Image (tube, rainbow, N blue to C red; front, top):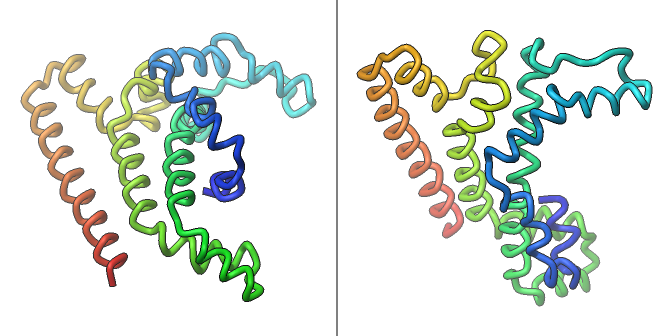
Length: 204
């Protein structure tokens, strides 16, 4: 959102939106392999940290709960931040410029314009975008399967990977099917409730 706010009036952003979407165009499996190579197999990140003096030896990113989660966060953020960025840029560019101009003439700073004008007007869009990303994170499978496989000790296991492990590794197909249906129902109810409330509050 911060990057979108600073860039949405820039002609460069308008003309080169596809450049900002490039990480989204990669296959999730390719992204997972790239970051797995960077963090663990190729030790690229560890070598960079050692070269700048932030680490004294190679870092085992999967040995720690928080480091393993960090690898998944970095991979996911790198690929899907452009998705939110382009949504927020489109929402900001769709706002009436006369409202912002009137606020500037009244002496409002850019931060006041953002917090008191832009952000309230974008609330429904923000809620929908964050809900979509929440669903993506809940159903994340590829990154977990390729990068961590739920290690260490299930700390990076998502619901999708849990269902896969129950069904295709432990052969508890009934349990996996029930978990799948339950996850679907919970996701639908939560997403619908959040989006409905956001649009109701946006109308009032």
